[in-house]
Length: 194
Image (tube, rainbow, N blue to C red):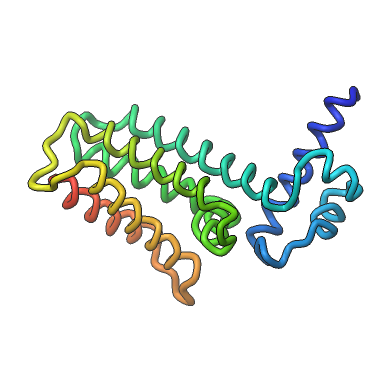
């Protein structure tokens, strides 16, 4: 392996370790030493890859968001050309993708909040990206009496996030189909659909 390949391999091993450890026991409870032990690298090698735990969390969160955006975008492109069709396809794609791996769901919906200021900017960028996606997907359709398509999108996204947090933390989590149905209802009503 070249030096560049070794660095990329270590970085990926750290991302893999963080994907599990940052999801549980969580960001606050995960030390650099534990990350390095799990990734089978030295502490010195950690700092060759990342400036600290926060930078690693940022990279991991950004990857989860990018993958989710790509998955939802693809679903929207394949959706029926109606507001209801797009809403249903987008919500289902997001919920199924976010929940397909509990670690992804925890990082994107719990640890992003529990990490304090570490991910504030990253979280805002993610919400803005998803809001733009909602705005674009609904642009061909009237939004009813709502004064701002962007604010409607932000409110609906917030509702979806809370539903996923309920799924993660509840002793008796709702079924995924129920989450999709409720989120779809919220988005449809917010965007002026039926």
